[in-house]
Image (cartoon, rainbow, N blue to C red; front, top):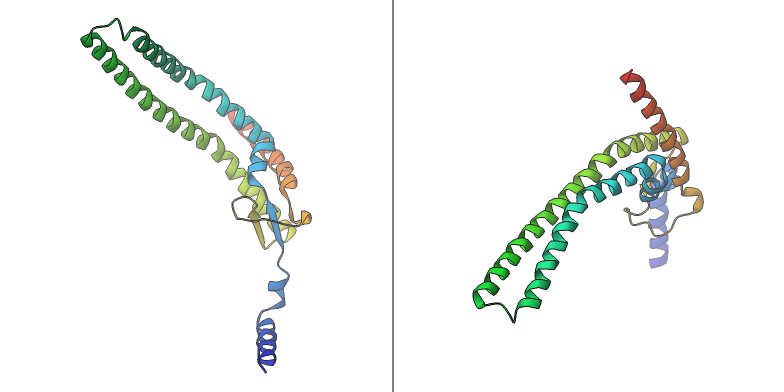
Length: 182
């Protein structure tokens, strides 16, 4: 009796939902791969690395100075008076605080630069995905990594297609920007 009731409920449930829900068009894209493999993504990564080298050199110098002072304190600890040791320790603590502050500023600058470089790419990418989704009749396009997808059929994966379309759209955008400058 319970089986008959359960089967009837399942049958009613299936009839209650339109058939279209069962045949939804879904695609999956790996946005991280798009950002790493596309032309604008590669350029952005190079810009970020160049910026990192540029602002990281000052941080590296401060770290070397701090390490040198620490080594001096360790090597000279037996020969220095208590007052001289205290002065060196105070100097070391001040430089360590400056280094921590500089490191936090460095991290903030890097995050800002990444945002600055990636935002235009994301804007173009979202437009490309929306146009592609409408053209191909997809009901849903999901990010493979951030949506928690553990498995998908290969025919659902549109990452490579989106990379190609993003490259074309980016070139078109660059041409439009260049022509507007002239």
